[in-house]
Image 1 (cartoon, rainbow, N blue to C red):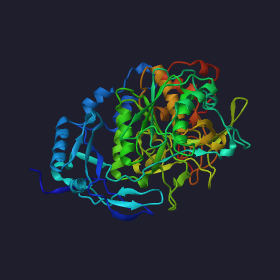
Image 2: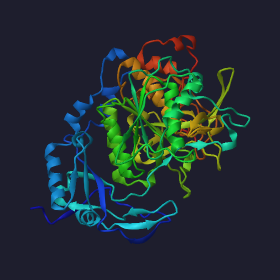
Image 3: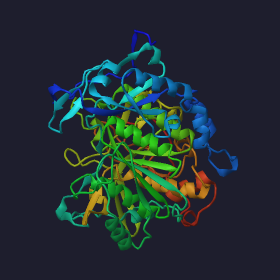
Image 4: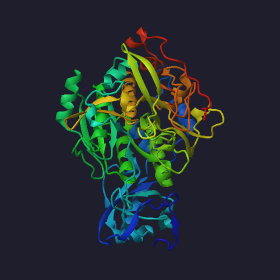
Length: 543
């Protein structure tokens, strides 16, 4: 028999949503699905060990990341813990929804009535009215019988408030396919040429993309890539927690989905693109991430995430479990590129403080910031920090209040917390990307364009390596080359400076130079542009 004592699930406390009003108790008969995260059978190696194991500045070291199968065997959930959670479900009138990859993802899906879930987790669920849409929510912490407290590391789905926002900015519709400004928009493959990307096409690789709304149309993709004279990539959709590819109108989240696919596909058309659609909740977001990381069918070697929210809007358990999932990806050599946000150093919160966006602020994410890119005669003529504030957006960046400074940022003098971003790329909608959304031509920017841009570059690198290259963050910080250093502009509180800064990180890519430094094999593009990139040295950012 289980103990009568209960324990709080650490980090599960939920705060009220600003502007939300409780209107009624949740329907006790409503059936809800939740995801329960289990502890690993053995803790993953600490960051320093992962850094040493995955440092691969050239292929000569022959060090390979862990396979998905080996990671599951070492760091997945144990069958014994899974059996105990099934017992917990039975004791509380809950049903276990078998998914087949519970152990790898350390995730068990349970289904039950609101009444039974409230009893099982010591919580009261209510329906809330909010200008952004009604939702089922909770306030306070979750509890479970003490017999299960060490097994359960997180519970997601009881609260279904919208969790994240897409990080894109669109030029006004009347701008057409070319922005009617003094500056010029670009096709994604043109941006890749300006950044001197290598000639490879990502063949044999899969780029995973996480989407929390919207959808894509096959006809649009065919029309778009045909117009660019580029082979159309294979694009497939994967449903997570009931999320589906649901295209509707150009003003919907379709813009985010099409921007992600068209940027990555135009840069690495040989790569397969797997789009993981999930509901916009913390459960849906996390399940999409763990599904992509542990997907043995599509096997993405790099993942792009264009959605996020300020750290302050996440529970500690969510930040911890996302970070653990990203650490799992790093151990398997899967780089996860995350947009750093489009609202400058405040990240859109009007409390007078600086904030960074999550999941970009995880030390195991490659955080992608934004620039304004101007070109002339097929060369970069000027590149500065993207900042069109107060109303036109600006690159996110700053310092985490949750994650300590990772070892690879140890050269940032006087900094004790994780600095964001790591890298950057063109994000200003005034110099943005030409895309096609639901039959409508448009120009998009935002750091959500930078994440798939970097993912496509990494797919090219993985193609040459023959699989996941390994966790790149520590390698990038040690290379000392492969970047265009951005030293002009600010995102509000932080100013660009020589070397790393909290606006554009190490800078924008000199793709072929970066490719050669990581892979160790000269590329044809690099031979023509040797020495073109500025050297980047990490130092304390100016405030």
